[in-house]
Image (cartoon, rainbow, N blue to C red; front, side, top):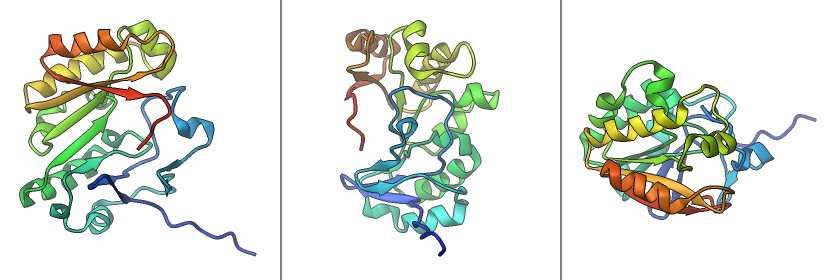
Amino acid sequence: MNAVTQPRTVAYELHGNCYVNLTSRCTLRCAFCPKFNGQWEVQGYPLRLRGEPDVEEVLTAVGDPLRYREVVFCGLGEPTLRLDTLLACASRWHRQGAVVRLNTDGLASLVHGRDVTPELGAVIDRVSISLNAQEEGVYDRHCRPPVEGAWEAAIDFARRMRDQIDDVTLTAIDGLAGVDVEEVRRIADTLGVRFRRRVLDQVG
């Protein structure tokens, strides 16, 4: 008997927003991420992708972006690993007048080997960056980056995004050992960006 193939979730609606699931791949291997504990669902939506959607599939899955408060690039993978697809879709929605947000680990420029913030700033209205720690050692312990300097790269990305758009937010998860959420808030204040506290194990 053939196994039942579960339809993949390319776009899903929560809180009046449309969330776009571009990839299951990640830059980081965060110890607290549910997918590394075998959990690929968010609020009942199965987000594990076997094969990644192209531009047309994403646009079709979202439909009319103006139905939503925001269209948000956010799944259980890092959307900027699909930078070309992300930019193509965001450009279309931006021209239509939709509000487009990117939730990211802030390592896109590091991964792609160039400053990608001008490209993102041209089509993205809001960026939320998961900094998750007040210093590199704590960050490395929880987020497990593949290369050195990732925490500093995320800080630099936030600083450069701030020069591109007005709405940039750093986030940190309250409940991770050694993470000083108030210190991350102070880093955000120093950078001149917003801060949002997240709660451990609350996803979606």
